[in-house]
Image 1 (tube, rainbow, N blue to C red):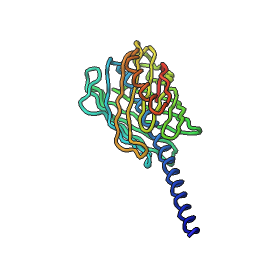
Image 2: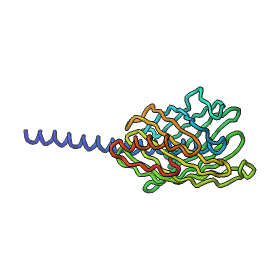
Image 3: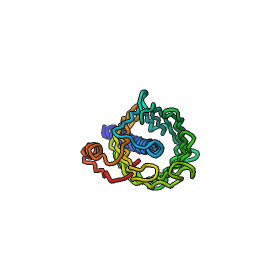
Image 4: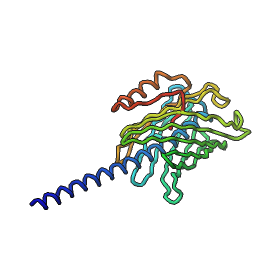
Length: 263
């Protein structure tokens, strides 16, 4: 009886350890895929602000889907939305390439009569640090967005800091740039996230702009989710502060809303 009880106890113990290990692996992949998706959305928002300028009180609503096992994601604007009085559409997807060791992503859409396409990679290395390289083409204008991200995962929670820089054509509005780097922060807790990007006034965005996003995806198994992106001229403190404090209140998780960018 003693041996049988010991065997059962060992089976239960190993099952718990195996489950804990699986949950940790799933949550780590979840966080990495979510962070990658947020970064591609940051590229989208930066492109909109620099090419079309911010518009007061604009919210763009997206549906999303995240698969931590396949390490893939997708998101799409809900139909019937406007930006600067023009119809806007956008859909994007990304997945991990085990051969190249990075995430590839692509986006397509339209703002008014102008078509939109984008493609690039995000690679996570080290502790981890993400390297972002994306080419965006809107209405024939070509832009390049590069970035470096510092990701700090912890269980179901995490945050990141980073820098994004945008360059364009020498013949484009405001010249080639570079514009930036724009620093910032984001935070997420068990599938809910918020991020902030602040663009100071420059030749492409004379009044500056604020990019703010929040959303959720089921944790840790992924699945359908949603998010909204706010794009507005600066300042917008009444919009930013309540949203930042709401996430900070979940489990006492701290979040900095610096005058900067996020992923």
